[in-house]
Image (cartoon, rainbow, N blue to C red; front, side, top):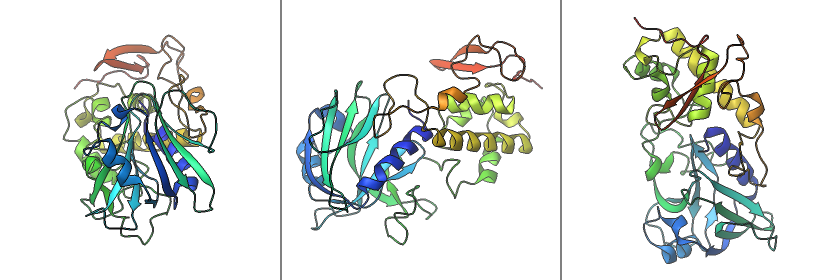
Length: 312
């Protein structure tokens, strides 16, 4: 499933074309991609038609586009919320470009420059979705997510989709509170990887980047979070921040044809991985073969020599 770097790559790709764009047409080719929209297909299309997209915003793995309308169709602020799921892609195409296979929704728009563009939601397995959702005030009254400054001085800045309001800030967020998160680590007896994947504690981290951060920190995935010293917790979070930043710079991680950026291109961070997907290969630190354990219906990749479980 796409994690923060992949979603941020998509956000950054959409923003130049869609910020300030006006929706001119909406085509729903597969209603299953609207399963999280409460009002049905006609309501989805009518809600979007003619709206202005104010920004493209991300928190963790969540992506949303705040909307404004020229009329009073919305009783409260709303946004178009996109979930990539396992195989969702958000592509930008020129009008009239060759169709993309497995396209589920097409939103036509006019960019602020006057250039027409098509936003295509492509999804092979249909675990992803699009939906219109109400925006609510953040619990800390700070910005809802990262928009690269597009919402500066806007009343939409401190809002977040209701469906994402429970999601904690991610390690690349300016308002991410390292001290508060490490304090919560100290109260968790669960394995540290399970804690890293808890989106209510910190968001954006999935299986790939958790394995990579734990490898860099020399921590076993099942090491109880509460057993970490404050210094070790801070070190781990710094590794997480650096890995996520580096992965964003490389356009995310692609292992197959499912994850693509808005131009349909793959990310290249896979060439920098040290643990995830490296089963049987020599550890880049000590040469011991990387091992994969079954874990929570997925896998954990680690070096048995560098990342020993420490009890007591």
